[in-house]
Structures are given as structure tokens and as C-alpha cells.
Length: 168
Image (cartoon, rainbow, N blue to C red; front, side, top):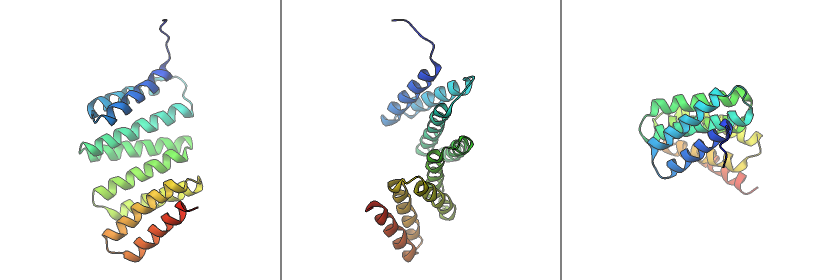
């Protein structure tokens, strides 16, 4: 076999290795792989939307690792970086995913009002994209926040909205 120089393929392969390491709960190896992929993408002379989408996914995955390992402040930085990149390239799925990630961050850190802001934005984007299941997932999270805060009418409303989307 001949070796070929293919940085895009190399970055995608590092992401695949990161995903496998993540699934095996080998977070240090996953982090290293995602960081390697991001580094390669950032060094490309020309990047297209696919490269940036890969970068957004790797950044978000680093945020997930940070949440799991207790480095929540860094997780928020990763999610916000991924969100901004998604906005910069006009990638609504990446924007909505990271709005949801940031909402999860705020929910887990005991800031339900902030979580609701991001969750509601994620729902709007998912609905605009006709991703009813993804919108329903976030609506359930919103319902859970209202349930935990004792706002049961709001909780029912969001849960029934989710159910309606799933029955479409």
C-alpha cells in the first residue's frame, strides 16, 4: 500500500477513534482524538462546510466529555464555541444541538431559567427544520424543568406538545 496525504480523511478518522473511545468511556483517549481532529481541521488552508461540521461535532463531544468528567466550566466553553461556529457557517442543526447542550449544562448546574432560554431556542430551530423528534426531546426536558419547579400546568403543556409532535 502507498501512503497518501489526506488531512480531511485523517481528521474524520480521529473523530471516529474519539467516538469509539467515548463509547468505551476512555475519555482521555477520546479527548486526545477530538483535539487532534480539530487541530487538523484548523490547519487546512481551505475548509468547507463539511470540515466545519466535523469541527462542531468534535467540539461538542469535548464538551460532553467535560460534563462527564466534572469540568463543567470548560464544557460550556466548548458548547459555546461549537454554537458560534455553527452560526458562522449557517448550520442550523449544529446550532440547535449546541443550544440543547447549553440548556443541559444550565439544567445540570441548577440554573433552570437559563436552561429554558436555550431549550426554547433549540425547539424553534428543530421545528423550523422539521425535526419533530428532536424538538419533542427538548420539549420533554422543558417539561421536566417545569415539573421540578412545581409549575405543573407548564409541564403538562410541554409534555403534551412533545407527544403531539411524536404522533405526527
